[in-house]
Amino acid sequence: MKIIKRFCCLIALLFFILCSSSCNVVSKIKPGDFGEYTDRLFATIIGNDELTIHYLFKDKEALGIKETSLSLPTPGSSSALGRLIINLYFGPMANYNYDELDFDQKMTYNVILNLLDRINEKVGDMVYLDNNYLGSYLGYQAQLPILFAEYRFDCLDDVYNYFGLLELVPETFEEYYNYEVKKSEAGYGMPDFVIDKVIDQCHEFIASGENHFLITTFPSRLDTLNLPDEQRAELIEQNKSKVLNDVCSGYRYIEENLGNLKGQATNNLGLYHYRHLQDDGTYYELGQEYYKYLFKQATGYEDDMEEAIAYMQNHLDQLVAEIRSLQAEDEEIKEKAAAVVLMDDTPAEQMEYYKTLLPGHFPVIEHWPTINIKDVDPSMEDHFSPAAYISSAIDDYSQESIFLNQKKINGDYNYLYTTLGHEGIPGHMYQNIYFKTQDVNKIRKVLKSSGYQEGWATYVELYMYNFVTGVDENVISYLKDYDILNGVLTARLDMGIHYEGWDQAQTKEYLERYFGSYTDERIQKIYEQLVEVPTNSQTYFYTYFKIQDMYDRTKLALGESFDPTEFHQVILDCGPVPLRFVEVVVDEYISSKVGNNA
Image (tube, rainbow, N blue to C red):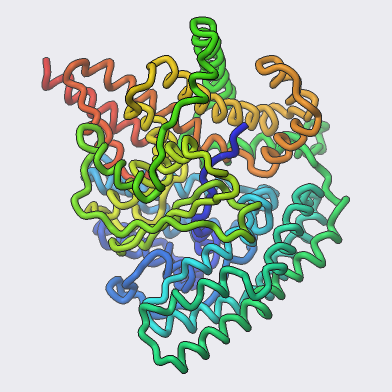
């Protein structure tokens, strides 16, 4: 199975900020003017955390943001009081008459109330399950080096703020460990296989020594500041010292202490197995309830889980049938597909080529920023996804960055063909650039649905097969079907493991029903990966199918008047809101077009 492509490298800002910001105001806010009200909400959401604000904004002064504090996200627990304060701030949004709002206001309304629903649904011990401070895929210790490496130096103060953040790593990582201890004592300890992977990551970070990329890339990051040679040399030495002492100290602390928690996990299986026996003899299905909560958050839908499972199972069965039909029609199709060359340009050249494919399919962007394609440092290759787009500041239109993991790509340019479409054009980078140029409420540029973003990127990644020429259509269908199959299979396994309670034996039985025998070692690897990141695959593939459904429904309804560019613009103009709201807008678009054509 193909590992999910995009490493989720977004800053985990929202819940940390909401639980700690503006606690001095507890009186109910009356909505008043919509713009004024959302401006107050915006100030609350972004808080005053320097790391978050620096990534979100290039010119914070223009937004009236002056005071910031140096901090890294740290564990916190939700409480009834915290939810009350959040409801006092965000609840008044429901007092507006939805039908009287304009389009942008409606989308803002949807985003805020969806956020409020998710916050109110996370109750009790779910806080112990909703944590990725330490983890081999989405753990903060895995993200932090890239976040530090991408910290912009627009002025000298930024360098000193950066140093201040480096100094916070030891105490922050100690808090992460203490929280893992607390989780373990409450019965939600980290599985041993996750502990081992985190320790390995920390060991590799430290082993890089003076060759670590936070040290080797630092001098070039100072180039735009035009500093005197003496001052520049002094800053370079300070950075080396802080990386080798402060940052490595934090990673060393985790490496040396996390192993103390091995053997304490009460559950090494999926979320389903977190069940609480109640006084009346019945079980409270905590894990299932939490999975439903995560599913809503990941996909942007509130679908019934049994119906969602049937939806994905149906797609899986259809794909398997299509692939077997293609194989029956052409016994050599597998060999023909393996011989196809989708691209032979460099990644930078391919991105330029993708720009030329937009007309007639997607809205054209007139002014492109500089696109930087960088390789992940060797010290991060084993624990980094094949590729990642790093979101740029919402008010910066000059630079965009994509990271490639050459070890995992391993020279596979066919893999890069769709991956660059996913991360770059017309995927994440294109969607982000497009939306940044739109005149919309600032809140919508900060609160982004990952289901929309990953669903869009997966949809357009597969759309790129439409541009392949000179290859038999059946071979292209075969290649595309296999790409989708990897994703839908992963998503179906995710549902089985976390919602239906499959163990490794059941997972193996399910896979062998379709694909023949699997070794126990391979099953264990698949199973452990999915145990660690519940619903991650739904963010990509449940949402992909939903967008594809919208496309198919629109094309069927409009017939010859269907315009791919118009359809894609409808989705892009909605911006990264939960997809169930996008679906409403698409259906309204269909109705308006059918009415005009009648």
